[in-house]
Length: 291
Image (tube, rainbow, N blue to C red; front, top):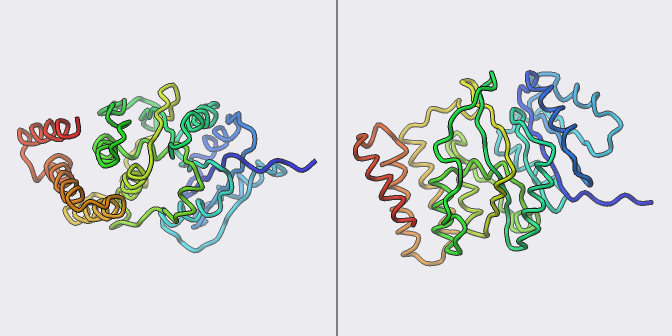
C-alpha cells in the first residue's frame, strides 16, 4: 500500500545546537501526530548535532537531513526549508524551544476550523536556561487581532508581539504559490516580525488558547546578538512600510499606517528617543488608535 503524503511539515534549522540535542530529540519523540515530514537542516556544520540526530532517527522515513556548508543566514535557511516542505501545513521548530505532545494536533485543528485563516498559534511561555519562568509583557493577544480590517489587524499584531505567532502552524500553498518568503532586514533584525506583519495583511490568524510553547531566553542566544540602534529601527520601519505598500492599495492608508508605526517604533520601542513619561502616553495612544 502506498503511504499517504505528509500533511504537516516540520523544519528544524540547526546552528551550534549540540547543547540542545536532548531537547530536540524529546520534542520530536513527543509529537503525537500522523503524516509528518521532518526536515533537519544544518547550513554551517559547526558541530556534530545533525550527525547525532541522523543516527538517532536512523530508519525513520519521516526524517530527511540537509547538510551543506553554504553558510546561509537564518532567514535564508528558513526560506530554504519552506521551499522544501511538501505538507499542506508547516511550522519551523527552533532548536531551543520546548513543544508539548499535542502542539501540532491542536494547531491543525485550529486551522481546519477556519479555511480562510493562514496561521494558527498558541500561547508563549518564556523560560531561562535554569527553567525559571520569565514574565511576558502581554500574554494574550488583543481582541482586535481578529478584526476583518487587515491594516488594523496587522498593526495590532506587530505592537503586541509578532514573534509569538511565528512559532505557529501555517497554511503552505498560499505562501509558496505567491513566493511570500521572509524578507531580509539589516542584520536580519526582526525579520520574522516583519514577515508576520505582511502575512496578517493577507489573511486572518486563529488563536488557540489551550495550546502553548516554551521559549528559552538567555544572553548569548542568536536572537539577542544584535543590539539594535537607530539604523536598525529605520530599516525595520522601511521594511514594514514595504509590506504595507504591497498589502494595501490605498495610499492614504499606507501613509497613516507608516505614521502610526513611526510613533510606535520611535516613541515606544526605542527607549533613548522618548522620555519615560512620554512613552507611557504614546503607548496609550497606540492602544487607543487600534481599538
